Length: 119
Image 1 (spheres, rainbow, N blue to C red):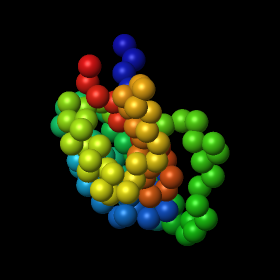
Image 2 (cartoon, rainbow, N blue to C red):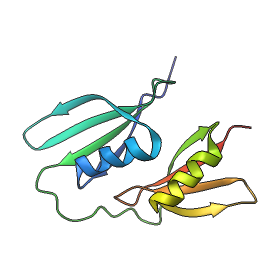
Image 3 (cartoon, rainbow, N blue to C red):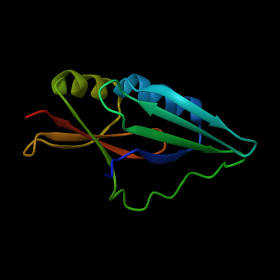
Image 4 (cartoon, one colour):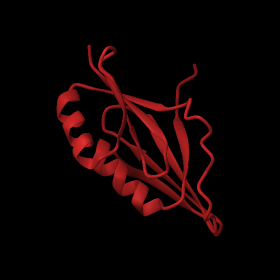
C-alpha cells in the first residue's frame, strides 16, 4: 500500500505563512520539528491525513526561486463561493479560470494553490 503523506513548501517567514494558511484555508498546526538550523511545521485539515509541511531555514533571506509556478497544491471544497469571496478580500487570488470553474491563490512566498469546487 502506498499513500500520500505530505507536501513541502519552503518559506521565508514561518509565522506569516502559518497565519496565511490558517486564515485562507483553515489549516492548523499538527506537529513541529525544531532543530538548530531549521524548523518544520506540518499543517493539516480535519478531513484527511494529508499534511502541508512548511520548512523554515535559519539565516535564509533570499526568496526561493519558484520557476514558472508550473506546480501547485490543490484543494476541493463545498464552500467554493464563500472561499472565493474571502480570498478576493484577502487579495491573494492570482488567477481565475471561470470556464473551468476554478481559481488559484498565492501564499506569501508565491506558491500557487488551486481551489476546486466539489462537483
